[in-house]
Image 1 (cartoon, rainbow, N blue to C red):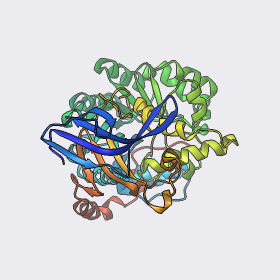
Image 2 (image 1 turned 60 degrees about the vertical axis):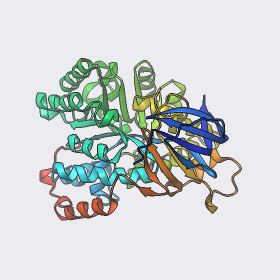
Image 3 (image 1 turned 180 degrees about the vertical axis):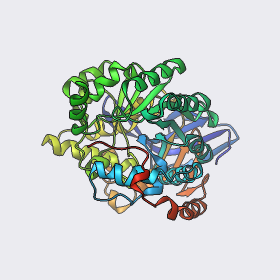
Length: 445
């Protein structure tokens, strides 16, 4: 990890997105002082001190570090164990039985595995929603990345569950030198009753923090909620006070027109994970309608069991193509709009719109260098289009978070992949045992 006072990236192309229009500023110098961007100027225009590390940027494209606005990173432990099943079976026969095997140490190593994958794919920030999050926080501190962490709780845990998610949020907010922020993390309206959700909202108000929750994941969930409560899940969250707080709403594939109008009046954003929806045949979030109403949309992968990767560039490409396919109009979701979602809008959903998602003076120095020299990117007529439609995770060469170099020329500097993979492998026999009767929750289809 770089420990110089200043960092200068010399002669690099810079992705610049404003109001859904993205262009590349060619041959720029980026100066990082401490953990923030101090200057972005035409090459040769930046004055630096003696104690500066220089990274050659020629032939590279600098863009904001990618932000994964909703994931369950330690579920990398279960990658490949729940394939070709419907959602109810996925939960009841696979995921929730498998998660009954989890120990705190598993989460620590599973989190490191996912963080290593994400660093290699240019992801510098993740909003994670899982268990044993104190150990996940340890992994984030070791990796050098940024994270918004929430300890998942269910309604049947009662007051103890509310206390669990709130205590973690209170203790760990600002950890890892400020790289960790925290949110409260009730699972979903269908696993948390109204009293529980109201209690969580009350704790979020007390702590002045936000809430990260799954909501309206499918149209079937919305119909079930209407039948049981006479309200959609989004209306439940509004009525219980959850949406009075800044809220990350994961998925929202089943939201109604009325829901979108309600969401537009509240401080919430949607975490959009298109690969999960395609794989589980879950529908898709109405990205265009949400954005037209003013509801921010951020890119997400969801967990590595429903997605199988933590590759945000893959989510970016799928989001754009699914939007075009569903609308029947290839003009839908332009390259500029897609990249704006991947950068500035994801930063809004993540809760740091003035700090992340833009390479400008005063923003946090979370950025990546992408090599577009490979044959799959040639010829380069439009670098922005390359990022959306042809760039690969393996094109990411250098990753910087909070002003520190985490990967240089594809070499991880903070995590030991060999050790991580070995430690994860040690627990696989125990972790992959699936006993449906031991599941931690039940999904009602």
